[in-house]
Amino acid sequence: METFKAHLDKFITASDEEFASVISFFQVLKTKKKEDLMLEGEVCKFKYFVLEGCLRKFFLNEKGVEQTTEFAIENWWISDTFAFEKQAKSDFNIQSVEHSTILAD
Image 1 (spheres, rainbow, N blue to C red):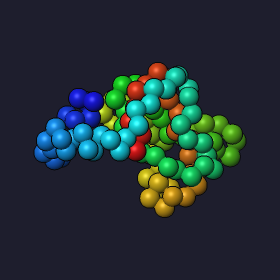
Image 2 (tube, rainbow, N blue to C red):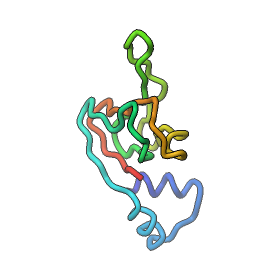
Image 3 (cartoon, one colour):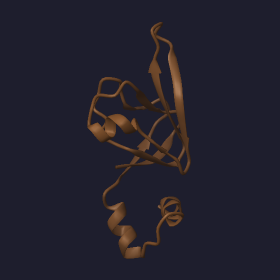
């Protein structure tokens, strides 16, 4: 959690009590390599913050080939922001590239 606290400290000043309140809105997830977090056609319900590991966002092109559009390494966020804000179905997949520890909001 210190990684996330350091990330937030770049933007805001939060006491330990305030940070505890913020972190209570997140789930800590441990993923396996190639574990799917979101599949195309699902409503995007989460934003992910990578504590350890790496995630990727991709879609299948017209030939059925995976096209990666984004990677999220440690201390980065990843989501389908448009679908998340609209609570709409996503055109993307989000998958763990390696064993990872992430926060889901």
